[in-house]
Amino acid sequence: MRVVRTTDYNDMSRKAANVISAQTILKPDTVLGLATGSTPIGTYRQLIDWYKKGDIDFSQVSTYNLDEYRGLAPEDPNSYHYFMRTNLFDHVNIDLANTHVPDGLAADPEAYCASYDAMVRDAGYPDLQLLGIGRNGHIGFNEPDDAFSKGTHLVDLTESTIEANSRLFDSVDDVPRQAFSMGVQTIMYAHTILLIASGEEKAEAVRDAILGPVTPHCPASILQLHANCILIADAAALSLCPAE
Ligand SMILES: N[C@@H]1[C@@H](O)[C@H](O)[C@@H](COP(=O)(O)O)O[C@@H]1O
Image 1 (spheres, rainbow, N blue to C red):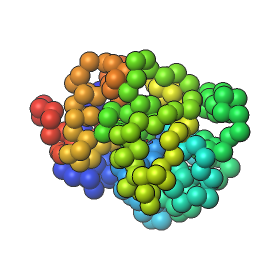
Image 2: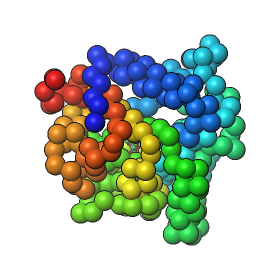
Image 3: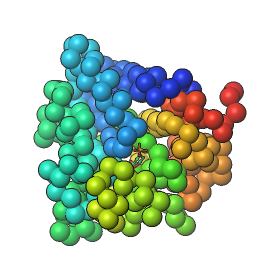
Image 4: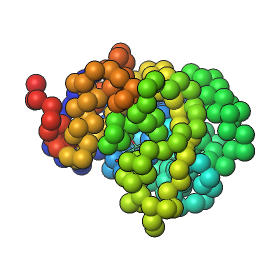
């Protein structure tokens, strides 16, 4: 794993946006795997800024998001559909038909998950997968477990994730207890993975992910085995990792 240490959140966001921007310049019909959460917001803002300046073009880009809360409609302000529209898609020249976020309302979860996987596979898997990391080392919504997950599946969220994500809801009781998430295996099929992390509350997860044993108890640790994974993290997130 290549580790890029940045001074702060803004520096992390700019550097991550640079990697995404370079990818779309080199391959205009790039397939991007996208993430939600607070961490990528600055990266998306930077991309929007560069789009407005004419430096980046999304017209041929297609996207596949990692996850969505079960039970939330696309227009629900807490849904990841809504997040992606408001934080990126509505502000750039991407064709919405080329954007994909798991359907939180899917009636037959098993069949739906298989179809989402087939879609990502048929797209050739992401050229570049953007990832955040949960405080417990989760990626997408792949929570610590006894085994790594494979394809897209329905996840029972852990109390720690529900609590961490409740800051974005009116109350903790409003946080859905389940989510659809791409599996770890699907994530690992991405050609390049760009993991971003910011802040002291991610320091333990980042240390375990990059220096700890590869274990499903820290799902992000499997990224150590990916041939082309880049971690861009600020000094606070890397505070438990010795500088090279
Ligand atoms: N499903 C998302 C993840 O994709 C994200 O990486 C993680 C960290 O979020 P944040 O960036 O807000 O800390 O939280 C959520 O649970």
